[in-house]
Image 1: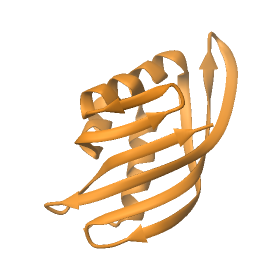
Image 2: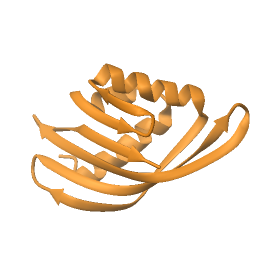
Image 3: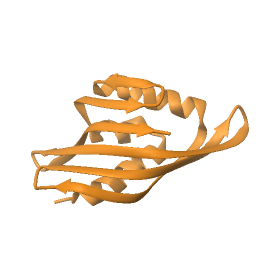
Image 4: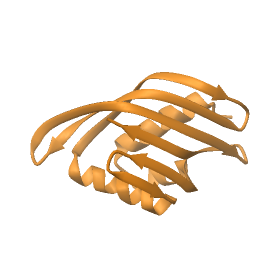
Length: 120
């Protein structure tokens, strides 16, 4: 059984793979994500927003750091963290940082993200 901490690391690795097929199973079908550029509800809308980010920021590397677990139980977890990203925007090296909060739920022994809020 994977821990919530292991799941967060798996999510970070999936994002950095730039492969939506690796990210898709980690997001709940009815999840809501709040990004600086808008809110997205439902897995397909969220994956579309992630794909758009990868088009805007080529070769993006997303790093989750300073994770603080606010709550962990057998079937849910909440954490907040700092994140950094770097990549190419219009061919130029760019980077940024911000804060995130994620809510995970476990069903049938599988963790998924049900809510994420990222802000700069």
